[in-house]
Image (cartoon, rainbow, N blue to C red; front, top):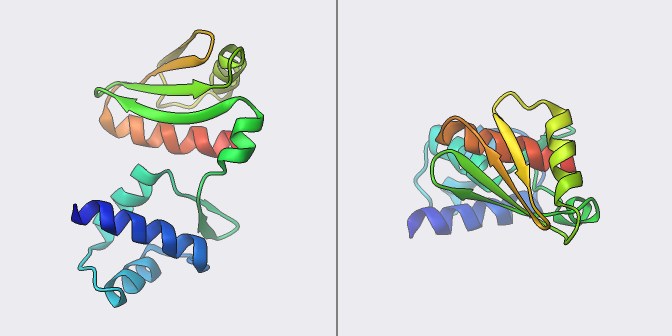
Length: 137
């Protein structure tokens, strides 16, 4: 429960302030009453898919991604990421992911509106999700 509240606060802070370092984010969270470490904030940023653009943290842009066919990314087990896509665009999304040659991705398999993205382990899942959002944003 605490993690959920902290992650919601992180998203809120990133949307409302220009935050350029994890230390800045830790300080803002502590002022808001959260007891956090830099390592927990780092994990939260990965799980939330937060990316750094132009020297500041930003959220992935679902609108831009959706315009290119990608709607959502979810974890499945320890070695799979599931991409939900606009109907008929899963193959195009998979091709773009394959062309990016993201080292953490073993391979993709596309259907009509879903892409299964195989990765070797849980850590690679988080890294792959972040890189895919960056690719489509």
